[in-house]
Image 1 (cartoon, rainbow, N blue to C red):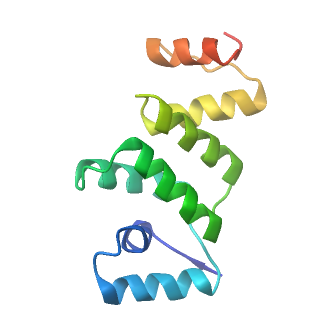
Image 2: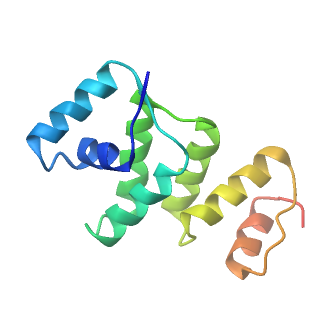
Length: 124
């Protein structure tokens, strides 16, 4: 299995360069994975450079993760769901998703995170 970096993931999602897209497709079809660190990079590039909406980013990455393996996939999918429905930063969504999964408290001064965790019934 091969590991896809952020650039491969972006070419696969954006299909903006046919040659690179085909290489990315070939890698995905032959069994590929990525790392947790690539997900926020993809989000920041899609939102910042391409103006893609949060819902579309979450949908594209969720679809991608049907075909590409990533550690802690369920955690990432939960964080992407939170990301699509809130204005929280993706990294904050990871903290919340992990906190929810482990029933552990996240210490933060971020009021939006605290409010979302309360709404989800995560302990303070």
